[in-house]
Length: 125
Image (cartoon, rainbow, N blue to C red; front, side):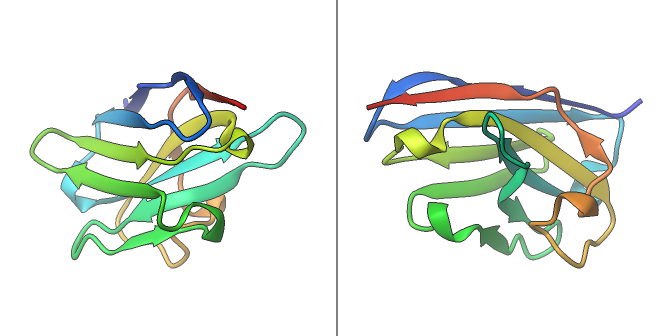
């Protein structure tokens, strides 16, 4: 059974930082594409960042470029999302996602078939 477990969410003031972690099990992690998504209340799920399995190319949605950094540790089956300069509009539930093999659209939620349960991030102004 594939499991993705997120941690590291919480409440932070505007301008602050948080690091989210996602631990994967039940899949060949180094052969999987992984990404982070978020969903704010009343909105659709949005792709935030993704990192390739091979060359570890990273992709970001425009609103987080220069502030968020995605990385992965294949030896530990971990993917991280370092979030700096947080803004109130970053408030959402953040989800980790994964899929074995290559995906054509790393920031599309339809590219992934495994999802974590989500972790809440709240940024106060």
